[in-house]
Image (cartoon, rainbow, N blue to C red; front, top):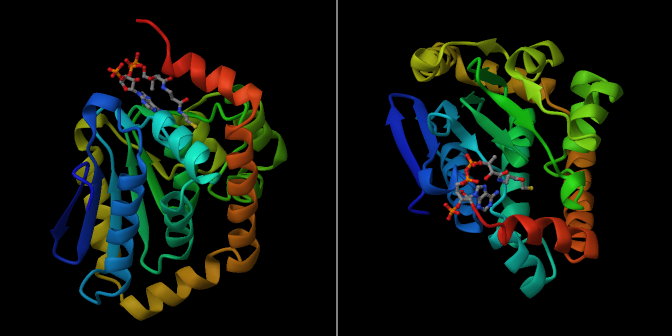
Length: 250
Ligand code: COA
């Protein structure tokens, strides 16, 4: 388990927390592995009925760790097995998943919420996917899920144009369930998780399964995006844009 992923239990609820404050919760391969492990653990443990995914105050996640995924793309020629494994585990995880977003939700920090059953956000949450500006393409099945949830135009503005969405806009677009104040975010998320955990678990799981998109097209899209994403990482466009971030002077 990565030192930056912490799990804790509250009765039947497992809390998975991204905890890398120095890097605004930019996610490394190790961290993807840690989250995927926790989700798998929940799938194999009947005593865990609901998963909760949290970040830190002001930083849900700054997205993929740019240095780490550049290293993976250059050395392995792919996005990194851990990332693709995480995305598949996330999309196929059998227990309900609730996220709580405060502050930055960039890149995968936005797109992973499309796999969540409920997302709580604070008024200062900002959802932003600057993939195209980085010479990349969206990932996590978001090119399939986002248009389905919010319609082509809003999804295009978010994913292709790189327009940031406020919490209010995200609520309206259907990727946020409730906006709550910063100081009650975690208690509200836990409260909802505990309510869900008290429901008959098999009926809940079956209902969720029926409501999820068909797994095959989603899995295929995750793989296709990942392949294009990895190719893009090696492109001149990405080298310039990601390189500019990595070598910027403060
Ligand atoms: N990958 C790697 N490191 C990242 C990161 C990322 N995605 N996001 C932030 N960090 C690091 C910064 O390099 C910095 O590290 P340092 O202190 O060693 O220099 C640290 O996290 C804090 O970030 P900083 O930029 O100083 O904070 P800020 O509040 O001024 O800005 C962001 C925060 C998130 C807006 C800015 O860091 C950013 O734009 N990050 C890139 C986000 C992105 O494009 N993600 C999508 C990838 S597909």
